[in-house]
Image 1: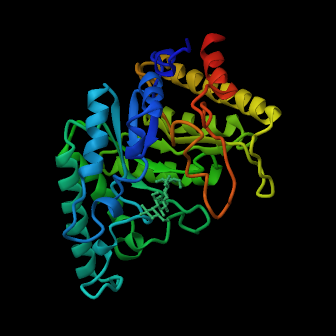
Image 2 (image 1 turned 45 degrees about the vertical axis):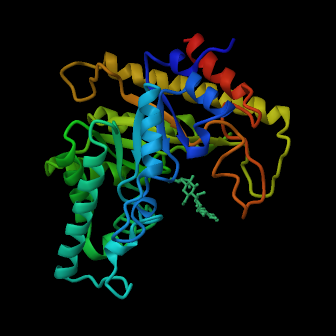
Length: 351
Ligand code: G3I
């Protein structure tokens, strides 16, 4: 009998999984129920799924996922209220389908549309969704001001970020609100994000924490870089969640394994172990920090670690353009525990 991952980590953080609705039945759902106590929709809660047109409000799949989480005592992460991809682009377009020009009147129109949408969604999931990725991937470290050049940004500057958090908080004051992004370990990206979240907070914008997507591979980035970033936000008093974890077996585009060699799976096992040891260590630092500082958090620095899938039979990394299998999770495509799983076990058993 295997250890349940959610039980092993219960003193530290929730263990979550991203799902499509077809993952909520059959053998894979048994794996989900045994090891995970948090759910997120891989696609169905994105604005482009819920509201592809102004009159659409497609919440039957989101409701199925929310209901499943409730039935199984799982937390629910809501991903996401705003994203430049898979977005509700009608909010940024005129009646003929052209992108809005950056005028004051259009900015006001976008503000109303965004606030109305977020109010409607968060009211719908009030008391049901625990955590929201309020905005997703708004940083672009390659740009001089660090902000992604999306239509949100072109029309509103950075105001859309503030509006999104304020509307979400007004609709459900007890939901925890996150800004979510990838490559948050990169020092430049981390610093841009840090300046953004601290200035939002200084302005009184209700933001609880940072979601670190953590799409990584078996050799990089270093655990130290991942850790330094979480520590920086945590010491300033922000909660941290790992929101989209997967550890690709590939370090180059020219490799293609199927099956994945044992030596690579072993390397992946050690990588899981080192990462989870560090996440536990960081979480404990919050509990033992000086209570007079912002770093102190009796709940720890990390509240949730979510994988962007359950087992290797389904992952966004199986992209047709790459035409290759990947094996980024703790369970293989037949739902058997991998060395990656045992790495997660050892990380808590050898503290
Ligand atoms: O639903 C349609 C289907 O009707 C159609 O026949 C099929 C043909 O391509 O496409 C289906 O939609 C796909 C959708 O996934 C559902 O499978 C889209 O093409 C595809 O682009 C979409 O990919 C998702 C991607 O976000 C979109 O950018 C991935 O599943 C999802 O894992 C991925 O998740 C993102 C996070 O939201 C944000 N962070 C990065 C992460 C990985 O890219």
